[in-house]
Length: 216
Image 1: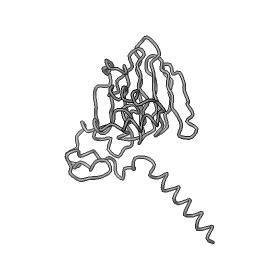
Image 2: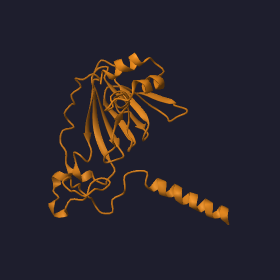
Image 3: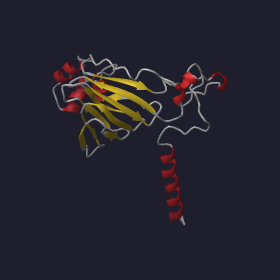
Image 4: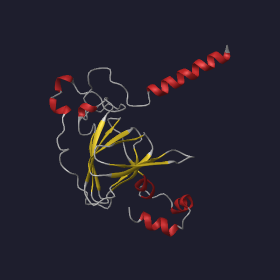
């Protein structure tokens, strides 16, 4: 009997964890984000239905290229709940990514979303790394029209290895997927992580860590 109850409890725990593994499902047609509300909830409180307009479900601008004049040579134009209030509770968002020649969308993670990316123009070298201890690298060269999935929470990147601009479109399984760029987080935290800690973690001299931190 005890083993039966244990099995049922384990099954319930797995079911609950799967049910809450992504953005919560809406319980009504929509819940347009009220960004002025002082109510603290996981996401945004709902706007008064009487105040909702068609503009709450609209964004314009993805036809325009992002500014890739930066060190990485890439630009991400996000369309999430910050841009479209009507995305609140719907568990989906979008991003346009532009890459200059040899531009990089550096290794990063989305803590709250799986990403599916399609190349609209050009070619990309993409990849992701699995969790410890395997840390297996999966890579692929994508051409126009190709689609690739980056599982939620895994470090991933995209690199334009060619001499022409590249455009990609990414969909993400959260209204607010979040992004943590690995280099920025590790070497550009505020305040800095101690160079003693990073030197030991990366097995390098502290002066190398100091030099990298100075870039941020």
